Image 1 (cartoon, rainbow, N blue to C red):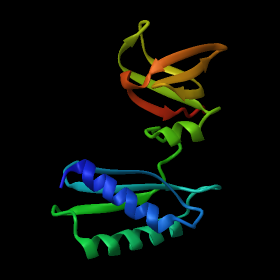
Image 2 (image 1 turned 120 degrees about the vertical axis):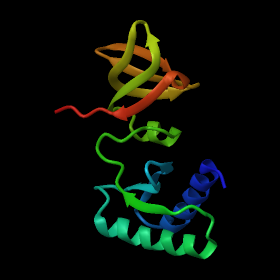
Image 3 (image 1 turned 135 degrees about the vertical axis):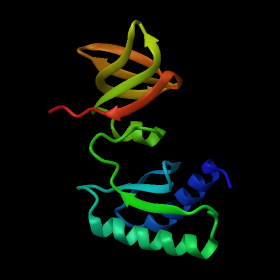
Image 4 (image 1 turned 45 degrees about the vertical axis):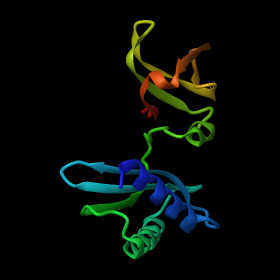
Amino acid sequence: MSKEHIENLVEKLVQDIVTGSAIELVDVEYVKEREWYLRVFLDKEGGIEIEDCHWVSEQVEAKLEEIDPIKDSYYLEVSSPGLDRALRKDRDFVRHVGDKIEISTFKPINGEKKFVGVLKCLNDGNISIDIDGTEVNIPRDKTSQVRLYLDF
């Protein structure tokens, strides 16, 4: 089973588990570091709590044991995506309109590879941000990473 297929399957499982609760699925990733890790990122209004993560982890683990779709050995991690979370899905961009973000690009655009500004919208494959009063549009397919910007 491919990495993408596993992520999609687990995303559907988690969506079914959290439906009707205040918990929201943010992302699922299945990655090989030294070992395989299946990571589930959750959030909710006011912040996700350890009890929420524990409850979802138990539910996901039970369901995965039942259907056994992953043949490799892996570690299941259920957590918050963190303050500097990556924006990956369209719904992430919608949720964070008005927040300050940092965009990294694969290649320089107008001589720059990093942009920091306030997210205005995601429209027709372009990320629109306000940088000191100037609207800048960056093609999403040219970005290597988009994250919430932490301003200390």
